[in-house]
Image (cartoon, rainbow, N blue to C red; front, side, top):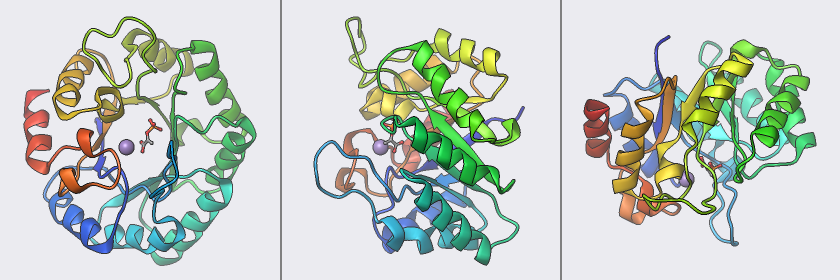
Length: 249
Ligand code: PEP
Ligand code: MN
């Protein structure tokens, strides 16, 4: 199976930032550009452009790249799907349920909304704390929402450190558990080196470690001007660093 590559900034921040992203993304082989519109945040502050950013997903489609965004609520999924496919019938859209969104009513409802349209893919991340049972539970809740397995992708983004963390990662990967999940559910699983590594050096390091395992691709944060990013500034790569990583893996 061809590796799935999802790359782009942590958050869509402005039209200028998105256009700068698309200019670089179109030069590379990328399946989806990440342009997240709704951001779960620890503290109040910038939490995404929300509805105002939906037209930026259309900008991506205009350049021929399929967009991807996290959604926190089923209504957000509905709005994005409706607006997007009213403008671009033949494109694909990827929505995802993030690590912090651990309300199974919401998980199931988002899956229900996505299940209606075969052009929409749903990616589901693991929860923050380490538990295979909970991770399996998320996937089973989403499957209860009726989503087709062909439209579902798993994503590992590490677990909160709890003891051993020799590389000082932001989140500690469990590659063995990831491979068990892949096998148990018969679903593709991609790796997120950005939220695992937490800074550029560690993103590079953990992406190379992950390359030893049978992941089906990756989602990675790349920003046109990482040091001025509104979210996750430390872990976002430049496009040059992204190219280097692709050569190293
Ligand atoms: C994200 O991918 O934008 C994100 C918030 O990551 P996570 O849900 O893994 O914390
Ligand atoms: Mn991020």
